[in-house]
Image 1 (cartoon, rainbow, N blue to C red):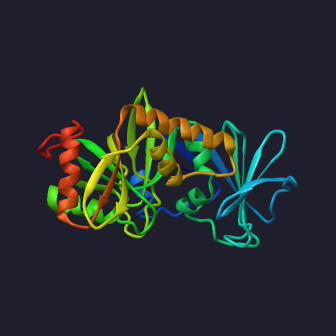
Image 2: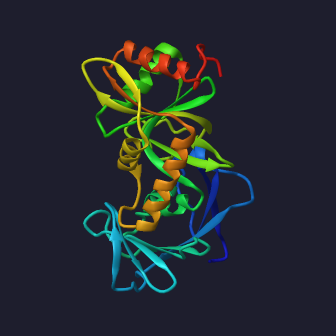
Amino acid sequence: MNREQFNYTLLLGGVRLRFRSEIPLEITDADRPFLDETDSADVSADIFFRDSQIVLPRGECGHDLLMRYKRDEKYFYATGRKEAVGDCCTIRYTPDFSEIACYVNERQYPHMIRKIGKVLQLFPIRQFLIRYQAAILHSSRIKICGKAILFTAPSQTGKTTQARLWNKYENAELLSNDRTIIRQRSGEFITYGYPVDGSSPAYCNEEAPLGAVVILKQGTENRIERMRMSGALKRLMEQTVSDVWNCEELTEIQSLWLKLMERYPVYQLTCRPDREAVLCLKNRLAKDGVITDGNDD
């Protein structure tokens, strides 16, 4: 690193990820709730601004919407797909994330990577989190009676709508709009926010113990049932932010969801966007002991 170094530590799912940059990075409203001021970090990543990209191995082991992944005997390499974000940077990291370096292609993409959120967008966050028994679920998150209730479903199915109905009629706190980190810690599952949070972001990093997961399905009537593990696992995997090319990661995520379902209910709520849908779910949660009849934290 150069003489001067700029440090930024993000607290993600209770894990401290530190970026050490050669130049100052911009902090946005999305980043600010996730910044951590403590001196310690669980993992550190160095950011270098270069006039050229590093030499990459030839073989590709996978890709997602933004990045391509390569590997050699020691490192993984995550590099931007030209058709998506361009080859603006490459992140080189060991499988255990003990060594991480981000090489920004400053000559071809000047000033493109100057925000903390942009670095995080290109970071292999899914592989990183699963090492800490954590994963990102495409979900809205509310808190009621001190418990987090997650609404998950494909886009445009009503996650945000149901969360807002709970906020309106039950005074539930809206913690996440589109993505939630779920982490197993000492046998319990804890939920957290994430800086990338959809079109109506909550930008909240409050942690809350999990109460239940609710898989939504649009319908003409409101009804609820507890799902069997096989069906629930399929739906949870469909809404998990993951690297589908990485078999090891997918296996670990499946194991994580199976452990979750051993302790917590996963429901399917077929519903309309109305108050009766809230009451249908509320009554079942109270009956199963997930929440009390009141809504005090």
